[in-house]
Amino acid sequence: MTFPDPDLLKQIPAPHPDEAPLPPAASLGGIRLLRGVPYAVPDGSRPLELDLWLPEGPAPVVLYVHGGAWRRGRRDDLGMRTRDWDPGPFHRLAAAGLAVACVDYRLSGEALFPAPLDDLRAALRWLTLRSAELAIDTDRTVVWGESAGGHLAALLALTHPQPSLAGAVIWYAPTDLTAPRGGFSPDAANTPEAALLGAAPAARAELARAASPLAQVHAAAPPFFLAHGTEDTMVSPSHSEDLATALRAAGVPAHLHLIPGADHAWYGAPTTEVDNLFAASQQFAAQPR
Image (cartoon, rainbow, N blue to C red; front, side):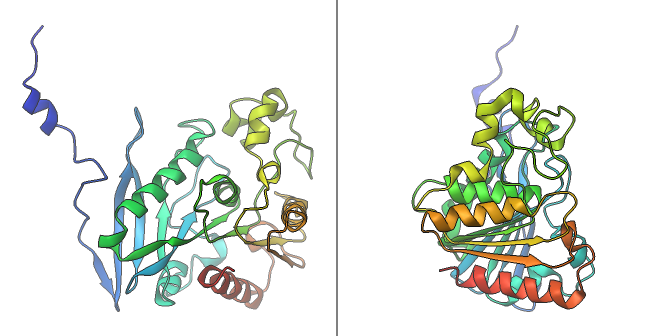
């Protein structure tokens, strides 16, 4: 067996994300867009990337977490009702002065919980480390997620070490993996929740509780903006209702918006209702307190 040259071993790997040069930015009317920026390389996993929408800074940050039942999805997708917007939702946020970081995270087919939550923490760490060259103010970070991404965003807001995030925008997200709600049963082993945990939630009760935002509420949590359709057939609106109640009981500001007649992902909601909800979410992200 031969022993490789130590200098060779140092040069073979790509530069670590903490030190790697940023890719060239596209210019969109005063907004810089950087796509596919590596922020972490978990051991044995693919590099994790994020897209950055950067206005003139130092800008407050929206950390966006995509949905997809923890097993699929794209980091640049805010849901089916925004896919035909021109300009798109992230461009709109950046045009309003908010930097946006759309992040990858490991899906349930790649790693079990808490891996995706660890990835979001790694993204926050990287953004803070590189904040000066990105011209962003990570002390004013609001996490925004939809569906499964909203679940992870809520957990991040409730469990991130001090200083806490500035706020959380949570669209139609599961918040309790421990109890039956709607069509969900914690005893079932064939659900997305079971795939996230590695077994039926009831069989991994302690982990299911750790993965439930409702069980992590505390008085020092940041303000929340919660939105849910009253006719959601995939994630019961009681998830958002109960989280709002628990936050308020702990003294945490919690804004709950129930959209009458809307199913999951705002299916069936009037276009004006979706537009107004996005505007309200953007306003909260800009001034959460």
